[in-house]
Amino acid sequence: MTDPTPPRRIEVALPRDPYPVVVGRGVLDRLEDHLALPPGARNALVVTQAPVVDAGHVARVEAALRRAGLDVHREVVDDGEAAKQVEVLAGLWRAAAGVPMSRADVVVAVGGGVVGDLAGFLAATYNRGIAVVQVPTTLLAQVDAAIGGKTGINLAEGKNLVGAFHQPSAVVADVDVLASLPTRPFVEGLGEVVKYGLIRDPRILELLEARPDDVLARDPELLTELVARSAAVKAAVVAGDEREAGDRAHLNLGHTFGHAVESLTGYHDVLHGEAVAIGTVVALRLGLRLARTPTELVARAEAVLGRLGLPMRPPPLDRERVWEVMGRDKKAGPDGVRFVVLDGLAAPVVVTPDRADVDAAIDDAAA
Ligand SMILES: NC(=O)c1ccc[n+]([C@@H]2O[C@H](COP(=O)([O-])OP(=O)(O)OC[C@H]3O[C@@H](n4cnc5c(N)ncnc54)[C@H](O)[C@@H]3O)[C@@H](O)[C@H]2O)c1
Ligand SMILES: [Zn+2]
Image 1 (tube, helix red, strand yellow):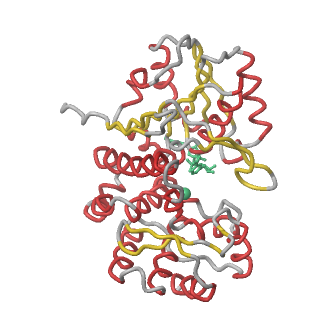
Image 2 (cartoon, helix red, strand yellow):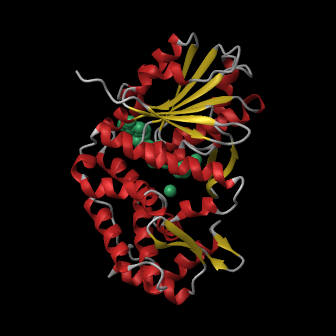
Image 3 (cartoon, rainbow, N blue to C red):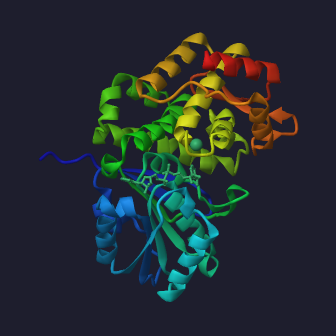
């Protein structure tokens, strides 16, 4: 057997609490090397979901935690977005108190973005804040949700309405775990990967163009490169935002219209990354109309999205309601609804276009 490529280590360079994102094959089996445990840590509370347990990933994590000398406790929450609710969180608070977890102990989130957000918020709130290690197991969580410290739960009144910023002490992303993801959630995550290529790292786009079949076959070396590069973009933007307000907004390419699609289709018909792909096409067409995005770049980006099997056409939606949702969105400013468009590859810019131009761009994308 050849030696696997060594893991990639990306620093999230926050001035007060920097932390590493470790990406690679088999890194879960060396998780103990990356834990950055608080002094005196004795207990680890693993929060996860059944599919992640069934795929065997949780056992690997727990074995590593035991090798690090920790007592391991496991909480399996219901699967799906419904786990991000206050009743489930309350159950976790009580589980932590039952251990009992101390200030020096650690929460370990093993799962997708749902587990990451929920367990992150548990760690943010229990004992006024304890350490959390993020072990993302979906592509979306590895390139996005696990990095940046946003945690929280949903209310009936809206998604992610209650939460806190709580940076993890480490993020450990093993690309081998992506092999057990069903096709649709895997491909969905590629919607965000394409986004990182378009806003910041052309090499991502080149890799997706050159080897789409290897990407879809989940070639581990290629995934290591794509996840590491995507995570590096997110890490740079997250770390940079403290100094240079506004750069984080570039991560919203495809998200203004994408969120409207998700919201108006009830957050289940269209997955987040799929909605982002559709929203990216709208943003490309908008940039074209505004004479900002070159025709070749629109063609190139759309070809990649299509080749990877991402949806690209806006579903039929009531246009008034689309504007209602976009206007309510956090991305709306006093001067109107903001869109990220591309002045070129890796040249994102925030604009507040006229409604007529956006409507025409949505029509273009649907044509
Ligand atoms: N905090 C942030 O910055 C941020 C950013 C983006 C999204 N999010 C949040 O992330 C959530 C969506 O995350 P998601 O797309 O990862 O979905 P998810 O967490 O619901 O996971 C999708 C499904 O895959 C299963 N699963 C996870 N890993 C698996 C594996 N390796 N093999 C087999 N099955 C596996 C899960 O149990 C679940 O059924 C949303 O709640 C969203 O709000 C947060
Ligand atoms: Zn997103």
